[in-house]
Image (cartoon, rainbow, N blue to C red; front, side, top):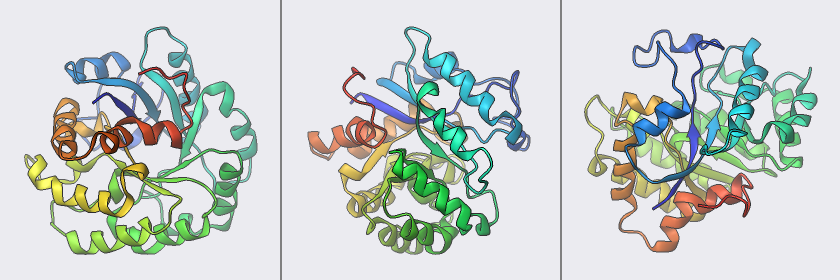
Length: 287
């Protein structure tokens, strides 16, 4: 089970600012680098990674992508591309930023929408610019809380129906509260839109502290899989945020348990095949 990690954050605190980490002790200090990631793998089989933008302060948006692009060029690394940050609610500079995507190894983009007012997701400028991503063949990662799924998330999915959208963290289910039925209903509604892909990532961070084993997560995983199917599901670690839950190696071990009953083809799709297709990684990625 060799994985493509489609959700690897890197934190270069000595070069860029991440004010959102200040109130999260596990992430508030130090750097989280590619070397740290390899250490935290503890020998688990990840063949390639995609950097996921790390909600840097606006002033460092381009700087973050440039730093990651330089790391991608280093020999022997795992980085195969990056999902960069963008501000589609603003016209100024947006097209120019997309023009830089090829030179920076950008295979997708994201704007974290769960930390801004819901009105941002409903903004007509944002939706128009997201459709431009679709015309350029670039997927857009969606990050919404469970409470947003039935409202602004579903509205955006319906309106941006000619491009690939990736729903991060299975829609951020509130596993700690056990609110399964509402999440299950809303995930099913979003999954009916075939241009949406589900990212199996981040789940242990939404569990109660110390409670993040495969038995607890299995109903949530099975429902997402039943709704989306393996051809519309891909895997991500959400490292180092995963350290708030099971940790990188622990999440990979849980993933193994969750995927064990599936067929070889289903496991291959979730572990790497869907990621190759959605982010257009191509045959040059040898894993």
